[in-house]
Length: 75
Image (cartoon, rainbow, N blue to C red):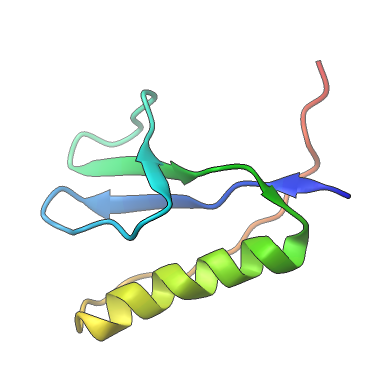
């Protein structure tokens, strides 16, 4: 089974849903980058994306919902 992570790039003032950790590599000075734990399977990752979307919808915050799937990097 393949493993996935869900990423969030959020403005500093936004709360972050449970299950996401601050990422040491930051890509935007005005936003914070968070990653989920490793999730087993695409269905589990999709559910994590949907929970994050629901989290922001419940707070009436506008957000961009974007999904990208990449092959794992083998090293």
